[in-house]
Length: 283
Picture (spheres, rainbow, N blue to C red):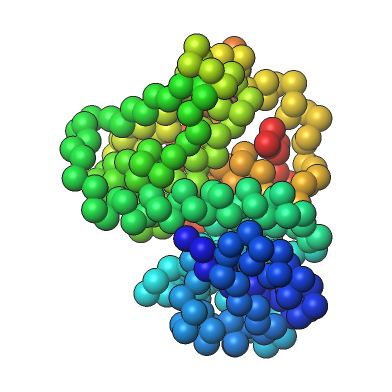
């Protein structure tokens, strides 16, 4: 996973970012309009595309939609100077994996690239892994010093596919939800030691998949943090719980702050949000 397509009508900005990414070992191509983005993607076959929303000709939202639904789907991040929750929902509905506010820092872009590496590897693993999963549920337990990995996400994809989830849900929507909840639990709950653990439990009913993420350490601290961050977009990338909230049907936290419970419909029918986000992430 080392090929990145940057789509930005400001070539100077795109080339400056590309130079930095090349130093970090990525192969990078820069294009300045939506039509050329599609043409270059067909030749370059990028793993990731960072696409500016406002492009001449074909809009960035349309570019994301076409790249994410191509025969070789591209992990797409939409970039915009107007980051807000309703736009995040539209971007996710178009096929993006996340949204970044401009100007964004390299630290936030690097976090997205790391997540993309996990997800792309997981997608490939899910097609070839021969592991037999339990019939009634999926449980993953990890020590606090163990990060979320591609093997776990491949199991999530396999389980969701077996439950009858549609392509969008098992290949993109549910992995995003599981990854972000687990990452929040590890970062804000379990200490980075073997003394504490975080875990995921997935079960299905007729129409939905229930995802429960729990922590044995410090708890998520969501009750203290969420009021402070309510309705604010104060980082240059969409936070984990913003993504979860935009993609799930419901989300609840236990009063003891150790458990998050999410319901995810097997068939996704996204609708743009017309109301503000009720809360934002701790990440």
